[in-house]
Amino acid sequence: MLGMEAEMLKGHLDAIVLAALEAGPAHGYAIIETIKQRSAGAFDLPEGTVYPALYRLEQSGLLSSAWTTPPNGRKRRVYSLTKAGASALGERRKAWGRFSQAVDTALEGGRA
Amino acid sequence: MSGLIDDYIANLRRELDFDPALAGRLASEVEDHLRDAAEADPAWPSPEAERRAVQRFGLGREIAAQFAVDAVDRQARRTWITLAVTVVVTFIAMRLRVIWLDDGAISALSPIVDRYAFIAALTVAVIAWFAFRRSLAALAICLAGLVASIGAGLVRADLFANGAPIHVLLSAAGEIALIGVLSFHVVGLGRRLRRTAVLRRPELQRMGQ
Image (cartoon, rainbow over the protein chains, first blue to last red):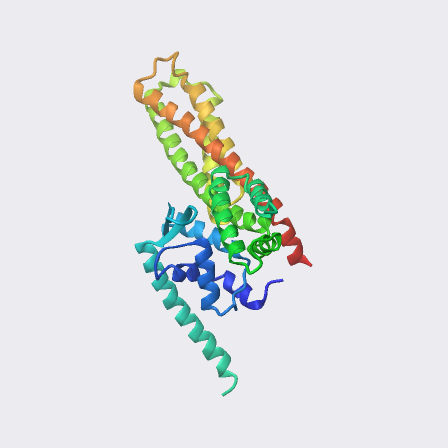
């Protein structure tokens, strides 16, 4: 069964995937590893969940992808943030900032 | 190796049979992922490393269900765009026929079917756009209405017997072609909706418990 963090993550997966690609292009496995590391293991979704999000974001023009073959490895599909994706990430960060601040205020209000 | 990854990929391909292009693309991508994950496992090389990689990835059916939901949205969008274009082209073709036809060529029934089937299709389309955008039944009614209207319009004009001018013939050809494309999209939407329902059944049953 999914934990509460995993259920909450589902609603924000697209933004988290965009953020994981901000540092540079990466393939699916590396993206999942980045998300796990950044969340210190709190987000424990099935790894396959990231692929529908990647495909959806690519279809929306927020990501682009291409097959690459590293000299010492197997062929991989590598995803990159597009200009529209970088801009969407900025918007989602601002929206999340406003939302989390409002939730914090609502939760802390009861303690005053 | 144990072949667990190969079995998983074959199963995922089957679950994604509603979109063969996506199934092919995802199969190689997921295989890379699973092999990377298995190789990173401390137990590698062993069937246990493959088993854990597959387990961490999640059930193929659940992943396919997420793709299927997105596929329905995309197909619904394509169908609506085609419907809108078909309505506009049908209206233009109707007007061109009316301008060209003389009253003597009009039989009693076909103008009524031509006009009211079109109005019915347009009314259902407008209501469905605001209330039931993913309704297959509504889209099928619109399609049936447009087919009836176009069919009646063509009977009414009896294009070849009356020696219709080129713009009337071209607009009629456009209508027929668009009806073909619209039918293709409506059938595609139905197939995706059915597949999504099958894939999501276990998930919905769990939510109902």
